[in-house]
Length: 480
Image 1 (cartoon, rainbow, N blue to C red):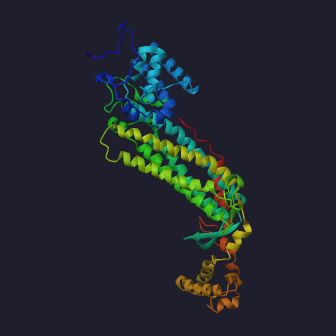
Image 2 (cartoon, rainbow, N blue to C red):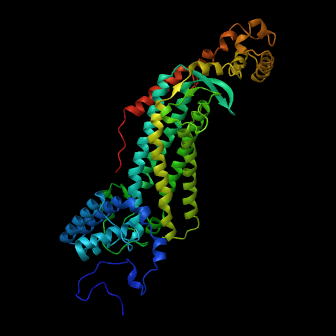
């Protein structure tokens, strides 16, 4: 006998599995536990209800539901949401995922009419919609977090606008730069991250999946554009098969998160290096450091190290989803259930990073004297000496070789280039002029780098002003 959804009294019973009509045997409890995603996707409940509210209103507008049915469903959804907010919404074994939890509880509240909510939609398009709604909200928060990091970096740059430090290539002293220029270098990277996430809000996260149904669309006369407008999407997806199998938007979020993680890790690495006793360029506030259980003198940069270490999770989450999607045939496959954990983890990791990084950066104390002393080692002003000869008409390759010999000679004596007299310079090449004495001074070396994007104080001040206008005089991005 075919199983019925009605009891002996003829009343509709609370549904079990949404798909159980085809089966004559209940699911093995072990299989239920293995396939359940509720522990992971429970955080989507708010967005599932938002999507259901919009879907209900559209169904009423299109006369697929009566106004009375729509009011009952909306009232029931509101009660489910309030129970969730109050922490009173309980799941049971038959709730495979957040969608079935909401549907089951709605049925308990309003009865059989709850089953009409699922008209013209499938869990396949429903879950993509929920995930996009969630990511639109969270990506907007990530954009705000990136803005906060940049604001702190900008304030630090303004505060140390004239301070000089060594710039490095291969972690070897290369040329002197302004501390503000170094800080703005990190700001630029986070600015690119911000743009990437902003583009997501205007791109793949701005297309409504709902209405694609299981994979082929629906025969009901729905209005997808109305649903899109109700949920804040500017357009609907173009192909129903692509829609339910698509997770490109998740990959784009994870890719942007992984790139941002690289930038977080790079900054954290330099904080670790520059706060070491050997460099002593800066000091981490005690509130953002830890001690050793055996060595009483230690002040360890654990927060920066965790920022550096968690970038590995961001990279791994991207690879996880890429691997899940690789080779999947169209359209929906249960493999796609594995899309949420890496996405949720990357979102959480970035938000945690943006919570801790700004106050840690704001508490940094730079050691101006030590940084300038470090510029006296490694001959970071050697390029200025070569450029001095170039201005006298000496080919750069010849000038490079001459200054290389100068560096070798003074290094053997434990001197710096700024210690040489004009007569000593001219022993290496007659083209050296009196201006060489000033050209190799740190302030002159930094000030000479006046090309666009360079480290001269004038250029840095102009960039600071540009970023200040951008970061402190714009509207805050709001989630839709």
